[in-house]
Image (cartoon, rainbow, N blue to C red):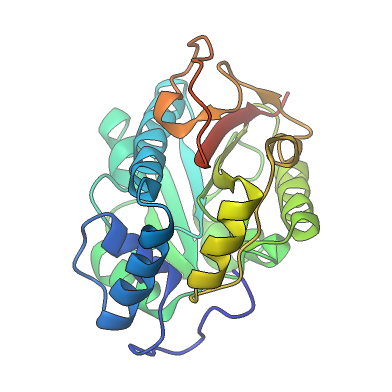
Length: 259
């Protein structure tokens, strides 16, 4: 995760995971998180729809991937447990699915260790900027078999990485994935004026605004599943792209398959 994500619990400092939890209507957040979240919403109130769209995309994509035979998932920057977590979605299709969650926030790890339990489920500490360390960790190697197809999930985290780092992270993950694997990405993208104003108000971490072409480049080495890169609310596997009126802030989502 970004350099300024806290490495120790601090209720007085806004947290990426707790702000997201608040936007989703959760209870695992503090006054500092709610204040920071509300400042960003004041800039662009429809942001809540974008966050909710990401959860819909996560549910649709993971369910579809499990239906397609994917049995192992690596969820990077997973955030606080909420309803319809990756392992719940996948294991509803096949209880044999294995899921490893990775995050760097100590609150996420504490809640995850308490709540993300069960056969084939684990949560581990890891820095998104160092995917090689994550995939070589003992906990990941215990559940994720590198010679079998895997789905790597990056849901609303790539905008916390600068473009060069984000591309490097995606490339390392694609290089590691076995043929038949999938890269699942949903990330924010905004008009630059709105993005700049939101950056000023979002104090939990540095953020970067990735244009559509940059986001599409994260899928290099894979083939985008129809409908390609789409609004997260509209992503349905195999569906035709759905035109939408221009929006100041979008959650763009896609699933790429490694040949």
